[in-house]
Length: 449
Ligand SMILES: [Zn+2]
Ligand SMILES: [Zn+2]
Image (tube, rainbow, N blue to C red):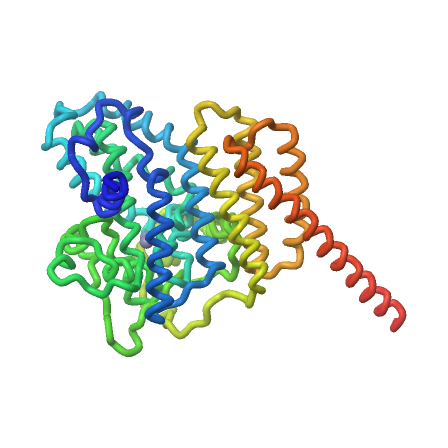
């Protein structure tokens, strides 16, 4: 019970200072990964309330896509994190202050300054086109619920170090930064909901669901607003604050991107905007404009101000259609089941990364990526998903027979193997039917000719 309460407190930055203070980076827990059960509970609670009150909609294609991004994000930390931490540690030797890692002052400075650093980092990845190409995936959902918070970029971390280096120079120890970056991100989970309206005086100081809804809007009045992590005061100070326009006809928020991608393909959503960035850059006629296309805002065009001319931006309205097709219930159950298999494999990957070999880790990762591709194929209603799924399940079963333990719990291991065998049988019959239908159609066309 006390552990559940502690976990709940972490989600709102309500923590005991002593238990979140560490001497070395190795001692800092992976709070994000530990919070996965709490993410799931809060998500189910939100969906339950939405269902009972009839407020909002739950679209499983969107939820599974967002959650899939969360899995990839958590795995990517295994690789990317070590590089940025080494850089921070190297800069720390040039610090101007010697702050005691145990002191309350250090803890509060780390909390405050890491939030300020987050503001500028977040603003930079919105205002610099190659940064936006990474971050746009967080904004690519047309729904707004707790699962949207999980929709994180796997490459955005490459843009993190410049924002936090001043904190190393200030003398904030690395363990404190690792703690507060995680607490900051956990706090941002609960603000992704439409169920909470406004919170009175708290709206002045804290980033709230109301403020963050504006940040996720594609309407012209929402663009480049409310970058704060925990505190909204930074937006008020630096002139990027915008209040939600509740109950104002015509100003309802249209969630998503201005140019909304029409797919649930996880990998595509992570990467597609880079093509747009480089196509734009290579279409420029001077080197100056080439670099402006990369480092100025996404709305910039030659001759316009750094962030573009807002009068030329399309004004997206909430009435725009939502992307998504009708998907049979059994396919939705199938996609959800295989998502949970991925979640278990991801947990094994993250919690055993120190002991697993690179080959095993790569196999798990490949399986997760392909499974997310299949789930995207189901919700995009692509014809090829049955074939990809068949290859995926057979390949993994073969791999399973060569690796003694994929899952260290025998019952779960057998259950998952059974699900994969059943999936192979199901997809073989569907693929066969698919093939027969195609051949019959083909013969009919030949006869007609
Ligand atoms: Zn953002
Ligand atoms: Zn967000």
